[in-house]
Image (cartoon, rainbow, N blue to C red; front, side, top):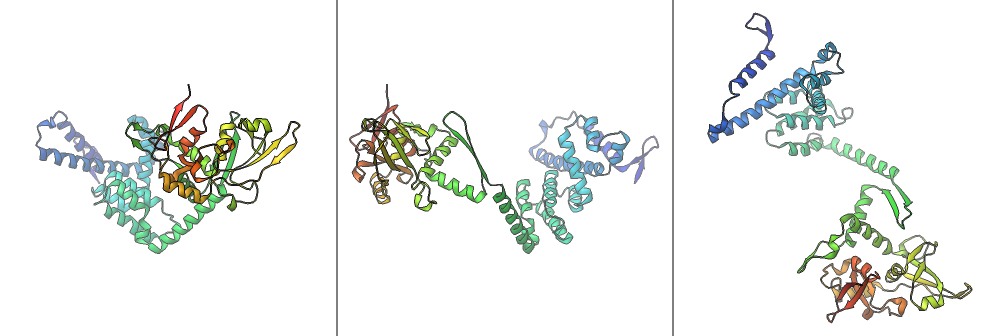
Length: 417
């Protein structure tokens, strides 16, 4: 359809409409909206928003059939040409071209609703994206039409975010049986891919630490997250402010929890290998052993500090291989677990939480610690055991700190001078 321009030159109706809009905007270019009434401002805002989206819809309709413009000017496509002449954003213009093509070739109901103001531009984009995600080869055309119509109808009462959620579940509404089959196939494919890509690599960094990179299925990761949460102290505030341990970043807490999880693993449920969660084969002279554990080597000859060996001794079995002056084995002790599950339960009833002054980490998240180190003759009984959270358990074995028992039975840490 064409109309005559003032000079007699035929003008397309879309160009005529654009000229009228431009003229109307020039007429109000200098108008001050400050003096509008509240009702007029509200009406103007809603009307202009609706007109903006309708105008954008009209531009998309033109863009969808403007390949000849790109050809005429030697541009790669109409988006590249329009970006150049309008000095616009390349990514945004290309996204508009994709939407224009989708509305023109596939989603005519969405295009019509946008042209008549029943959906806005953002809603149209979300609906088209949701429909594009449906497997066209497996979903009948009639179901696609029903899905499009249903989402267009929902746009009248739902925001863009809500439409995005509804769009992901549209098959569940218009074709429940097909939805269940699609979800089952998708889930099976995802789980198979997750199993096939599961991996774990370890790289020693040369600074006493090892970087572990692991990729596992979501279900396994969720289980690991739950187990780590059981070891991670929640954030607590006491009368003197934030607890000292709360200053630790969450990723470091998770790493420490992972170490605690490995140490607490039940060896009975593991394949026969080392025999216990942590088994230390301490190889050291008899005199040095009597003089306190200063150095300890694990079975595969890795070296750890004496404080770390003492800490592990609280929750692990130890096999002391005591060597004489010439290296001959003098005594090979019998591995035994130090604190039993019954003893831990009794400590939980007694201590209720970490026994460090001001710490409120629940007893269920704490570790059993010897008041007198087992390596120094401490007894493995209830009276000699105390519950400490993972953070303070490490502190208890840190030689940079002194540990003082208060009259209440709680403990206080002091950094050594």
